[in-house]
Length: 485
Image (cartoon, rainbow, N blue to C red; front, top):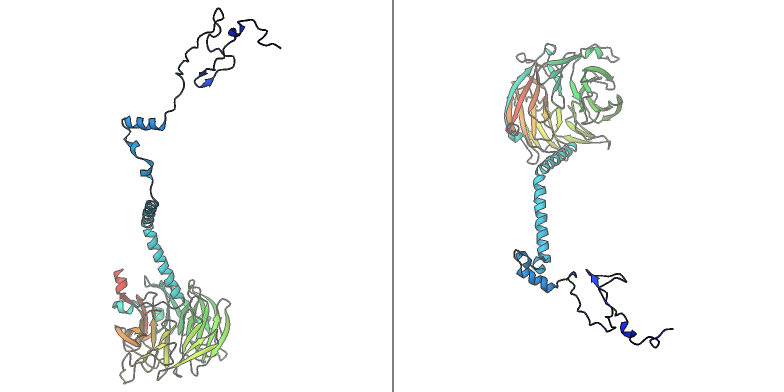
């Protein structure tokens, strides 16, 4: 081992001095790197300590105070004066800002959706109207807005030279079907007033077993809601089914024992109700072209029948002076009495109210909840030359409204405003039309009234008005709402 004892004198001074590691830009030099001249001087005397060079390349990190002072001294740094405390918003300000932003977004969306909202309201109103109409609870008051009624057109044809007895209007109001005391059924275009097609009823007539020959006599006509079937009473016990579009004969339904007096389809279905002089009401299904069942209860010939969308039918019993509502599904009936003489016609206003007319010249307004009429208008069409009341021969209504039309043989068709709540009927218009009014029908909105007029009553020839003509009169009913729109 070596030690300082064995070294030469003076060798201790020759020992190299430890130089601190120099850094270059803050990085230490590698081991063994030269930092400059060092070592003992000649003669072995120790060198004096050198002054440390300043570190020019070292980075200096300024303190926060220095940055703050420099910012104060700089130009164009005025925005640096705002502190973080001034920019912070309080929770209250944040809620206010978010609320304003939310309200502005809502206003923008509502402005964009203004038209959509109006459209949605229109759709909602229409859906509600259609629903109320389908369930029979829609109510419209149009009689009060009636302005004038004028006869705009007369429909005549040589094949209908005899009294016109029945008519039926298509649901869209474009086609009119008429029958008379002849063997022809005519199809009219309501816009042009021309005959589009005709059919011979006699060629499809099947006589009963008695073998008695009689000419065809179209007493009643009705149409299904989808214009798929047309049913007509040919003046005998049979019912003929036709296609209203092609005017082709489809089927002859047999079952009644006497002449059929009235026909009606249940709204929206192919269920046919028929009333006849054999005192029965029969139900037919035209989907199967088959008989379903018979309803009995009237004591005399059934003269008129009507129905809406519910499985119910109302009939007039003629000389038994009664009206009956047949609840088909419940297999029961409601009986109403009120007229003094034979009831000739009855029509539904809605599912809760109906109107009837009879040989006593009275018009009765009924509620389905009352056994007696809530309002009776005596001598609605006055007295005849012989001092006897002019009996009501036809009634038409605009369903689910307050407008009713009645006809007789006094030379006028009268329009009435019904008010079941006030229990009264008010006469609002008289339209001069000569002859026996054998049929009346409105279009869907009540702006057109079609009148079947003839020289004789549709059921007989005991009275003849020679000065009148056999024709269909089209009456324009001008309503204030329709005129304004």
